[in-house]
Length: 98
Image: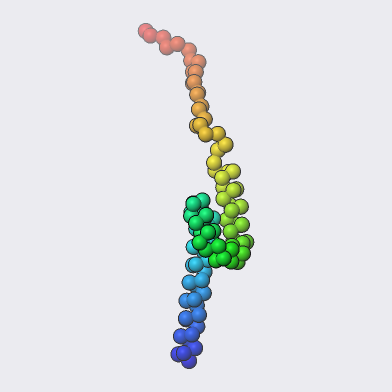
């Protein structure tokens, strides 16, 4: 019984580690890696990179689409700040002094 529980715990630990590796790769590739890092990885670890991209293609695509949507919504198209000039004009009768 103990060995079965131990094996289940070890198996669960491996699943969690694999999920963490998957998330780390997707975030690194989609968000954090610079063009230089990606180029170096394509040269030095081409087979591994291709395997991971093939394995996680749906997730990488989902992150890319989300980032494109975010950039369209959150980032303005213009590079300068818009200005808003408002002048408040109050029409009131003049104050009469006694």
